[in-house]
Image (cartoon, rainbow, N blue to C red):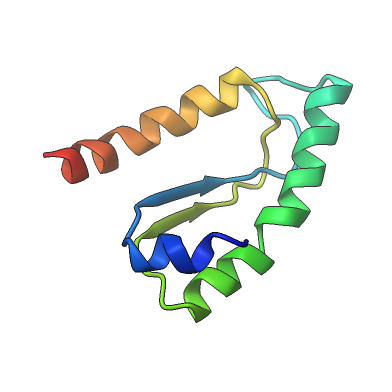
Length: 91
């Protein structure tokens, strides 16, 4: 949150992901994964996105799926979704 003005000024490309802590086909229903995702969704879903946009930010992807937890199975899925975006920005 503190760095949002600097990120906007630098036109930094962002990819923000936070799921609901609900399990789906990739698993990840252990207590630490569920707790961490539940905590991050509250911190990342509304306030940072609103603050980023209000500061003039336009170079971010905000991905808040209906299910997912804080583990590599879901992070790997996000990396695959992010790959075309990364390639297009890195050239």
